[in-house]
Image (cartoon, rainbow, N blue to C red; front, side, top):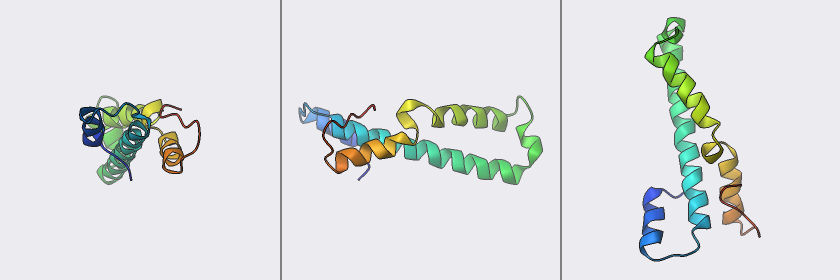
Length: 97
């Protein structure tokens, strides 16, 4: 199950000392959110037409920002593999790998 920020905070509030699995789940949730936002934006731009991507438009900035965000270490596609390692109990799994 992909966790969320509340799960992370609940774990901290409970005094959990090993947060690696929860961190990996939170990272996977962030990757999913960024990917979903990028997909929605891609559809929006496709329906808006090519003029929507002219330099300086809101769409152009959003595409640029989401492209950069989607490639960030914490929310890129590797977050899913990392989360799966924790779900499968792989020794040496690292939430930031």
